Image (cartoon, rainbow, N blue to C red):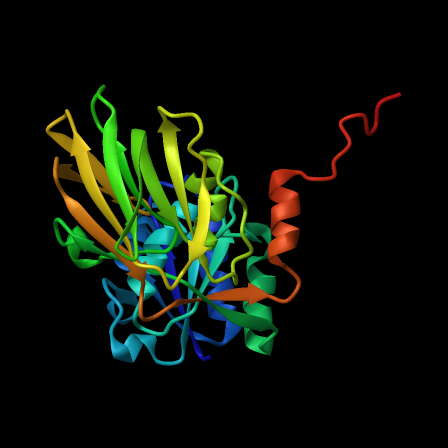
Length: 295
């Protein structure tokens, strides 16, 4: 690895010193580097950082991807956008956390120079993570993939009815606010908020979880990731909505979708001193005694 592709979004609230610190860390690393156009403009406007045209990018081509790692600087939303850019290019992604929860972007921002040093020394692991491929109504902005989840949800007051089939066999009809299909990576995202289980990221499975089901016996379930899951939307409302991670699209009633494991994974960088279980324990605050420190 000899190149850093930096990705961040404008509007994170970074001050001038923080922006200058990011680019100073990259300049001092000895790596070749490039930054996305939007963040490069903000760096110039807010911190006076001059980034030449040859160090800016709008998309990732084979030349830029060669020998590169992507650093996503922001929260999990920024990380999902970085994954969308990097997917299919073979570029591994590391998240520097400037957000709040940070299950995906789980490296503290205070360690930016240390992180660059770790990358230089090669002290990291690269993990493949399952992506979803969605086929059906619409082209999803030319990117029919999701790292976390595919979701169908209502947009009006009426319940959404979704028929779900696994490998051609009907599972059930979900009646309520909607239903989602999650990867293990996405088990700590939307799936967790609707009562789904937390799944270690290297497990080979999907989670199907109802969203505010009308029938309270409906519960999330885990199926093999070799499964092909089909959805048929029936609703009194004329339109519903689907989302692939943080991207949403309106759909008409009667839309059908087929979701399966994508042929290619995305590659995430895992620093050797930060494990999934460390992140889980810290973010969920497991093991903390509410009486600790009280007299």
